[in-house]
Length: 519
Image (cartoon, rainbow, N blue to C red; front, side, top):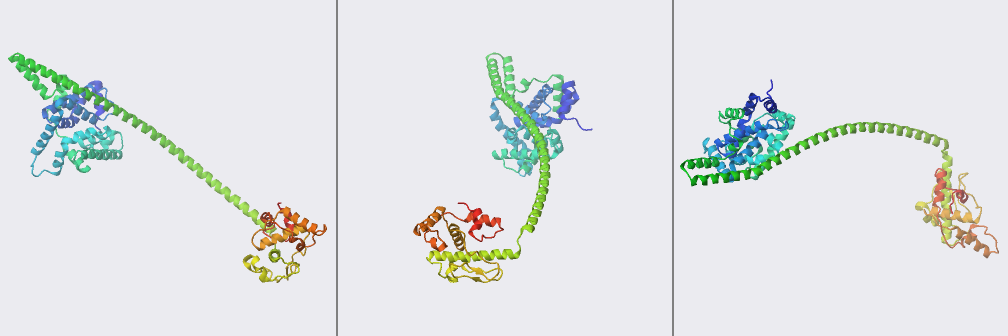
């Protein structure tokens, strides 16, 4: 059968006055309280009185202690505060005496010339250990007390703190690291393992055998000293005893001693005020920590719920992505099928493609001839050679007929021709304006650029020719080219529009561009 917890025993005592339950609590924690009081006071007798006072306070507050409080930590803190009351105004001086006393006591425990490693470490830890313990947060202090002062297993520590064994191990290790850092600030520099070993072996020693029984009897019978009497220091007791002794002898000396004792009591009461404030501060910190834990539990629950929602949303997104991928694949298959059908239905045959390429080549040659004639002011009867037009051709070379034909050219008044039947350019143009556009277009293709021209310039050139020839319109391109004095707009848009509509084929004459021409 599992042993009852501290709070179960305390509840039984508070509700029913169960003496056995309280005696079990005293027996369970008396060594811890006495050892702490002994370190605080440096006096065995005063440590016993402080220990008795701590358990009297426990009996008085048994019904008001929260179940969330770790009793080990509460007893340790109460022992510290009670001992501080007992030390009165000479606390600093007595602390130095306590250190000297502890060192001398520890040195008497074995051979001073060859102490063990734990004893050597403990001799340095003992004077400052409890001050460092007080500097820890409540949760960290409880973890160290349970693990190393009471030597409980990690499973028992976890059960007391309300966490798992693994979480208890993390909390204990973290608290031990903080304790090591606090000790290092006071010049005590040991590793965490060495500190843990020394504290576990020496922090709690056996209280006097009869102390537990006397405490239990005092609490349950109500015959113990009051808390105020127990809190009196040895110095106060000496003062009171001296006062009584002198009273028997008589007179003024007794009155003086009584006055001194009264002043000491007032001083003690003044020192208790900041201790009460410290108790209130500790209680406020405890309540704040409790609220933070509750808030963290609530946030953890929200996070778990949000994680579930996130996983659900991820699953839905994955499903939608799969559906979208399937739809895209279906759409791509349909588009590929339609493209294939369109290509099969409308792709021209090889002969047509070769003829279009040949016609484009003839246009390049014709445009190069006309460009050369324009730049060198030649007439229609002049003849140009292949060498003349090479600078005006793409890649500076005569193009080749894809069907193996031979190109014939030379006279400016004749269009270039090919030996393959059907590969021929038209021999004339329909109007001077269209002819001008055609010549300039071919010239731009031959130079891999586009010569700009304005409609107003075209009309002005034709009108100047008519004015010079009694209103007669020009009959050939060479008759009015000399009257063109300015260039303007580009032909890129018309050529691209025609090529896109005719599977990248170039236009055969200027008339072909009229539906795509933008003035």
